[in-house]
Image 1 (tube, helix red, strand yellow):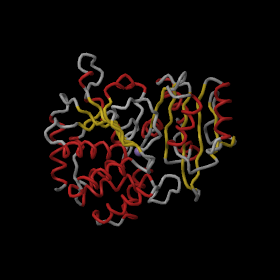
Image 2 (image 1 turned 135 degrees about the vertical axis):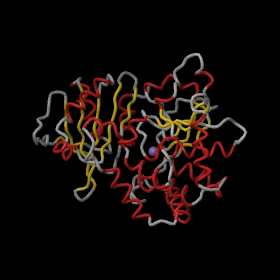
Image 3 (image 1 turned 90 degrees about the horizontal axis):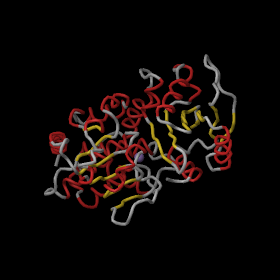
Image 4 (image 1 turned 90 degrees about the vertical axis):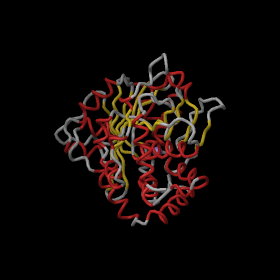
Length: 364
Ligand SMILES: [Mn+2]
């Protein structure tokens, strides 16, 4: 089997995307892991059940936002995969009440639907994911969830166990990319598990690639924010949640907020705009960088002063840890309803932060 079969498969999914009822849905941040995993999961389902209708991988962002994800474009290009054969969430209609009951959804790289997709919960039939389970599905939902470094590791495991020969050099590179990026070249002590190591080793043997060079190229693409506006930086890696009584979101950025403010002076305005547009009670920007060691800072927008007091007290006591530090004022002064912190444990990313928020706000 070769990459050409995969390309033919994508072409076929695109040709029938308007009528497809079997959807393989990635998460709304549409990061490298989510995109690779939804494409490869749909491909796997098709190989495993060729007589069923073709599963449609759906990238859970509007098509015009793919250009914000240079690492994904780079990887697709290396595989000679034409983005024109990808299907984005704005190209299909999941909300048509006359037909939505006939949908069958596989959730990839998330197990809780985004707030604006929460009405589709009854259509979820399968979940493959590495986030903490929200546990809101009944037992008929087929689940493969495990707290590994990336969902791509779990997809690899499906292929390795059942269809190892379908992964050629190019598809091995495709699956390897998110595993390397999400585990920081298998060096992140919080995220990397034995299964990630095993997956990477198996894939490396097929991929015939210098993994360090490959990783550095992907990271450089991911971290380059030069040509993006503040709003695009926030939308590049964005997730929202509905909790019991609150709604909120987190944008992750590969630069510290302190650095970003130097080049994107409209950052505070763009943050507030996105928060208001989404009716958020709370919106957090998680900045990350190296100085030279990993470090993170947080910018939080919140209108409710009591809520932010209680929340930050909770986070201060958690394993993540917060320290209130002066706002780095370059040209911009901090505005009312904004709060700025240094994150004490810089190894904890949005995945762990979301877990803390779920326990603080109570899962919906
Ligand atoms: Mn992931």
